[in-house]
Image 1 (cartoon, rainbow, N blue to C red):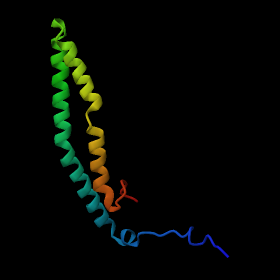
Image 2 (image 1 turned 135 degrees about the vertical axis):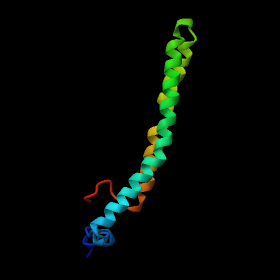
Image 3 (image 1 turned 45 degrees about the vertical axis):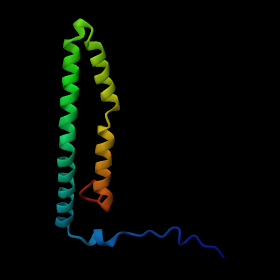
Image 4 (image 1 turned 45 degrees about the horizontal axis):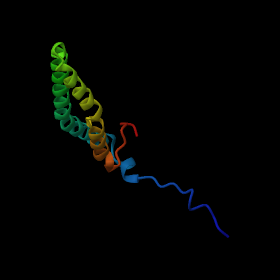
Amino acid sequence: MPSVDDMTTTTVATDRLQSPPAARLLRRVGLDTQYVLLGFPLGIFSTVVLTTGFATGLGMIVIWVGIPILFATLLMLLVYPHDSVVGALRQRLESGGVSSHLGD
């Protein structure tokens, strides 16, 4: 007779539960440090490019050249893959099975 016992069995990663809290904290700090150090240049680049484009477009709107510059800056803001790149980076760093919370 078929049984559903095998489908309801839950497996727990015992190595993560047996590691001391200090080791989990150190691993979490290491992953967060990698995330910040790798995402920082991307954030600086996007801030500089978008701020420069907006200021240049706003200053040149008087001579009508600023309208295409503002449009291009807005388009770059909408298309710029900052969130997807940082999200992929975060997912890749956490793919080792580490959750995003220290207590988990």
